[in-house]
Image (cartoon, rainbow over all chains, first blue to last red; front, side, top):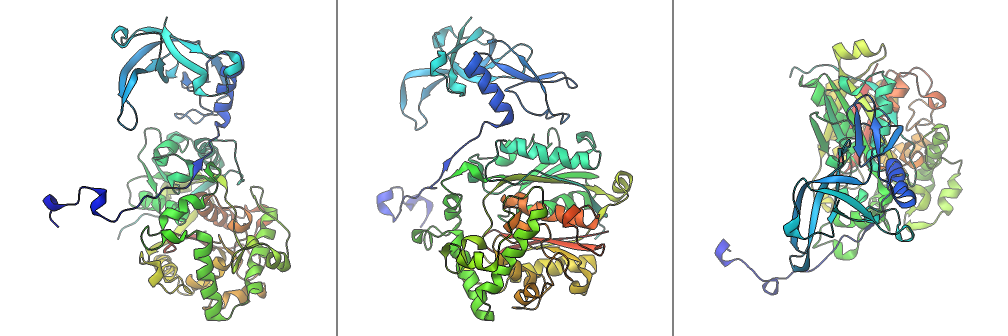
Length: 157
Length: 387
């Protein structure tokens, strides 16, 4: 069969659906445990510090990827940062238009190496700018479950 | 071929366990750091990193090689992940070897990680998709019953009884009692194996290694560096690997020809003409008890169908003439797929250096062999180390 005559519809060929019958059960890990407990219990964002490389990892790591030290020192990095870059998402994963476009941003926090990817809220797409100061809005303590979504979004600060 | 001499100079491993709190990359870090510490090296001393890890579906992470890279010490370094199914652990050491033997790098950190506990309800859910989706998958194949087909064929062709195979599980789980990282060490009897739950005849619960989380790392170095690092380098004397047809249904299931080809390649490289005399300690791949026997035969360390007798007569015991899986193997130490294969290379490294503690085989072994098996039951990987 040549390319121009190829089957283009499922109905024209014998096909069937299959899946990978698994679910994934993730652990947050040693560093993740501390990071998410701090958000859940105390509403603070923490980074882990490598004194020899002079880096504060965010999200925190249990080791320094550069010098392989096991990181013992942890600091609060605050809940304020700036928008490093952002996008306005208009369609869902499947390609359908979203009723409410979402603003996704990479947020850098001063003094921290890395950053957090999160939603921006309480701001319109046309008001969003790179370099804009933002701060984390946390869910009420009773609703927090030790997930990155315990941070509802970042809003203009 | 002008290839440089390469040695293993350090090794480290995490405990193998049912479910680790650590993430995969944290496990990789722990093993890598232990391996470096064991030979007093730092990441600055490492020129390249070779990573081995089995299906992405286990950890529930696609691009697992990329995910694990920082924990494996690959930041700003040449880095590559290899994957040949269950054969990955020993193949990763081969990959590390050719990185250094080629002259491209003086040192290579080789890291293998697996976190199978992420895969629910069971990693068999991922394995189902390694089979042909048209001719086999509708029958819901899993590795237990596919290997049961192979085991039955092996037993029937040679007239081997189940109890003679069960001795391997007994030996390995007992050996593992002396391994500080072991997950399934146990003092069991042949009767315990024969009375355990039948999963897919002739495979029973105690014939099989568990699913595990864990990581292992080794450091490989070129001759001039190795001699500076340690006075006990374990030289890579030979490597071999071979892949049989993708149509597992067209193979002679009773005998792993691909293991023989891999072994012959490694023996030739090592200049070994009488492996039964020249190999002093062996770590063949033992995810199932019959596989240890199957592989000893493929490695030409036992006549076809005769490995069970060697086991019954104690030849393969830790203090026997040819100790086999003195570590406790995957049946006893555990089976985080890629990490389990590299654990076998590490065990040979420790045995040859006299550093295996309570697991040490007597007689100061000079040459040892590690082997793994994988893909769709068709790849054999062999590494021979010598001091």
